[in-house]
Length: 119
Image 1 (cartoon, helix red, strand yellow):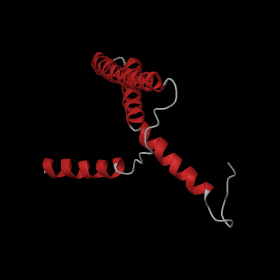
Image 2 (cartoon, one colour):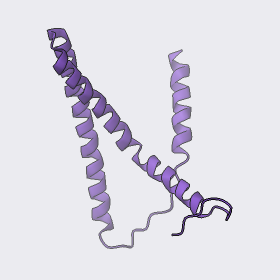
Image 3 (cartoon, one colour):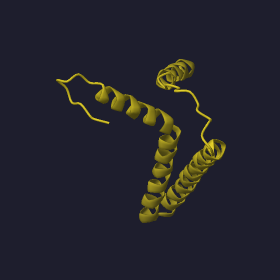
Image 4 (spheres, helix red, strand yellow):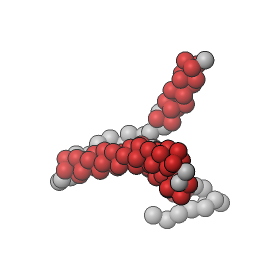
């Protein structure tokens, strides 16, 4: 049962990842390597921060719930869920940008009877 669910999850994730369009890398502009490194560092720092928020929030949530402090448990739950949401947004950042770019390009090339944006 677990193996089937795991395979279906991989297929669903593969379908989303397969939609990413690679426009080709243009390395000719100055500072490309530095910009690429900085974006990579920011991604990993964001993921590390999200993971820390998830674990610390979960610990605060669990300990406060056991101690009877519902206000701190609520705050810990918020931190844990915020860390999980942050990790999802950071992890799916490239896919989100590509999807919005595809939507923007389709609006730009829409027929004259439809909404048309000038760019």
